[in-house]
Length: 248
Image 1 (cartoon, one colour):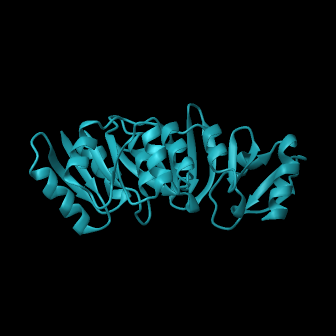
Image 2: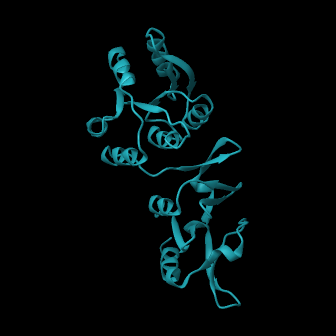
Image 3: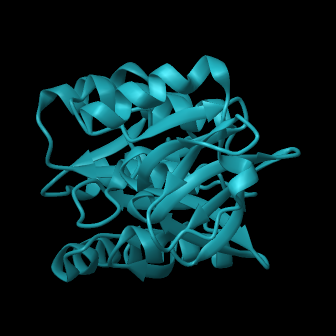
């Protein structure tokens, strides 16, 4: 079984590698010190199992696991955690592999042997029950076969584009596999729907105004390259957009 070790602390990675080197049936194919590198390495190396720390700066373990789950060949995930009983109860309730820090050899081997793939909604439920943050700080696009993580803070808007969603961000645009509805549900605190095919970041809207043709549109702050035609606010959403702007 090919294993990818992910932990932001090198001594922890060394400990896990040492344990696995002494066990038959497991091969450590790579290590990563953060979630971004973990997702890239997993896409490149297709490990069978990712041994994943939960508490990491940037992408934490839960968000990293959600991105791993979206790969063409998603690996099984075993979490390494120092969280309290809420996390342990949540993991056990859904038969999710985990090991408590400091990691014991017997527990690690048992968890790896029983590792199973996770559905996205399972991760969401576990994070919620364990009192962890469930909202991603990045969305993931596939560009020329490579995975690209786009910070939510850089996003101007999400636009339905046939069977994909186009994300307009500070560094250009990319296509996502996420549905517009799932993005609307997950990021409802930061984005507002202006029509059925568009979500716009509230903090990127400068004002709303009437156009010459009588339609109402969102005017974005300086730096946007989004076509004005895609920013028309449908009649049913005008009141909500005004309310969100007033509250921001």
